[in-house]
Length: 237
Image 1 (cartoon, helix red, strand yellow):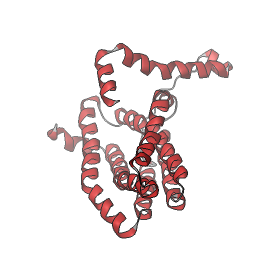
Image 2: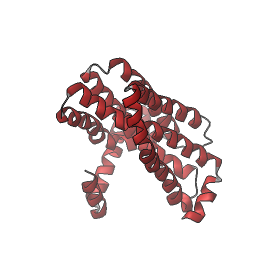
Image 3: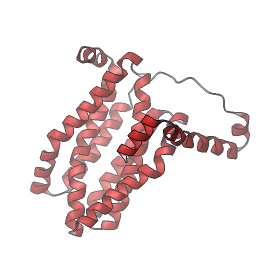
């Protein structure tokens, strides 16, 4: 795999996606430390921190089946950019409302919901930028950068919060989303083969929503019917 890495990074489109993803992860490293510390500061209890974790988990359970269907129907690049802009706006608001614990929980919910769409959209972009033989290496490059960013920057986030408070950490995260959007905005993306909508979808909106519902449920049925996927899902849960 190491021998393939230079070949992957020779692709300008992949470098751009990798850069955007890494920038976003840098901001996440600060946010991941700052949010639970903020909640602990406001509530003074582990229960308060547990509640914000629940606020982040619920959107995953509710929206994950829908996210794949949305990415199948809408340009994954548009989904990624929209998710980044939504997250940038939400994080930028945090320093203005973090005296209100209810608002903090609501923003945590919204950030998680946007991330539910961001993650599969990023995965859908890679096959359109990199050849099939390089997909494993390309994914490895992105996730290695994410893990190293967390390891390197989490201690820095703690020191920043101690020295200057919570606001700078959240603003760094918001800025990372904006920078990610600017980088992705110039991503060269091959056109996806166009699909002709079914007659019942084109004429009847109800048919379109039924189709979406069917696609959203398809992932659940696939996991339920495959032993390995069931095991992985149980472990993730």
